[in-house]
Image (tube, rainbow, N blue to C red; front, side, top):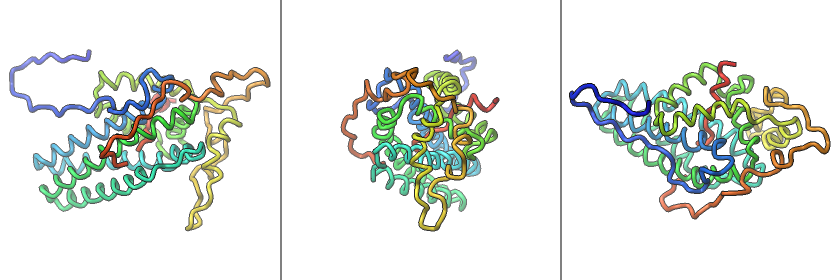
Length: 305
């Protein structure tokens, strides 16, 4: 049930209002690709927002030990979130002709700076300074996530088919690739569901887990096209690989999402060729004060596989 009956008249501390949904109208909820992007660009964003608000409450109450423990978890999942964005979603988008906006790139830098400052204040036990640093982090985070909802989310549905979106998502939980093993996946799942409104978003999230397990299978040729930007990335200045995916074969990258090629003449044109963004997408001007991780973590249903 999604309603609660209070059995006692004892005073209860007010619970912070949960962030639900998104202010962005760049992608309609009626869009055919909505369920393929909402987890990564709305639900997980709200989990970050809500959890950070809880941490701020703990710091204000001078419960720094608990705040520090919660912040370590928040940071661990945010780091994974950022890695997925940097190594999977943004390279794939750039390969389709959508360069990462400069404001988004700058915001990542500012976000990590703010995160480091909070960590330092908490480690030193400086309560007032920690509260101030957390408030600054919250301001950067809120603006950044909202900008991604206005810019990156519509770009994803415009440049990829629905199956391609689910395929990209599957890379996160592919054990071979090393992003999110089953242990981390379990941790993320409980964290995620514990930091969003279960009735308003959690039930939909669980439903999308089932869709993620069934959708996103591509042929070898389709997979090669999807991950070509990563596989063809030039080496970095220090000589390291241009992308972590370059360590793997296309079979390892696709995993269970590799399907047999469709016989000539039998392709489902609508399912394979039609871009998810062909209808229902509008991109209004980005509101002011937006200060540029997307890339969420889901398909948790696969953890039992």
